[in-house]
Length: 251
Image 1: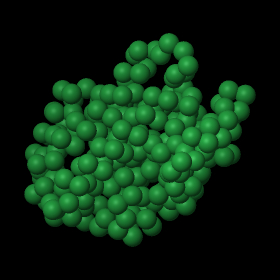
Image 2 (image 1 turned 45 degrees about the vertical axis):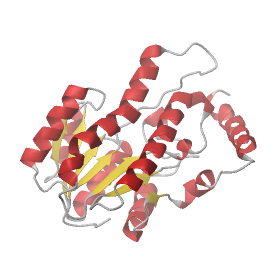
Image 3 (image 1 turned 90 degrees about the vertical axis):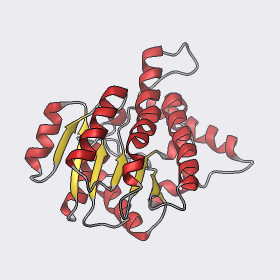
Image 4 (image 1 turned 45 degrees about the horizontal axis):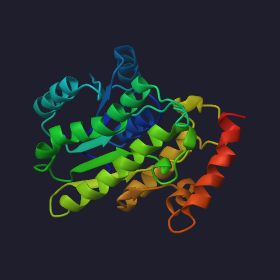
């Protein structure tokens, strides 16, 4: 991915990985626009980072997505990078009756939203040099966390979609990237103080190095073991991982 001179739209850009990535790319000479649901948070990041713009967006709302996509094309005609980062993660108890509202919101936000926004911008991006569509998935796309089964499933589905889209766009100008973080210290699952999670600034610094390398799949070292879990030992690995994490989240 080219690191300077881009016009970049980042969803979920007001906190956590999205905000840190937005600020890092802004500092490297890109025009950055962040999207998010809460106006106060958008105003705060704009005030703290002169030059960053913000647009209110709910990726789970198809009307909001269409309106924002149209506005981006008109107001930022040089837009060439879309980073689909917005996501929600909650304990969902797949061994019990699922909360339908939680399940629907997770699928709409984490899976349908990125697909819908990319669809609305894809024809525009095909016309731009150095165009990139990036998605923030998770190492849980490869090794599900049982207590967040719906979240993990949305990330696995998004990974599958990325593989298909990358194949279909391989003869175009558009590169399709997947950023698959390990556990990072953010507000997701109240992980800001979690000792086992990766510090956010370290994650961003390592991610930028991988992005600069030209890789399609952006993995930091801490996530590689999870990504490498394939083959006949998959179930044993997943069960061992979840036995460890059950003690962390449930006790």
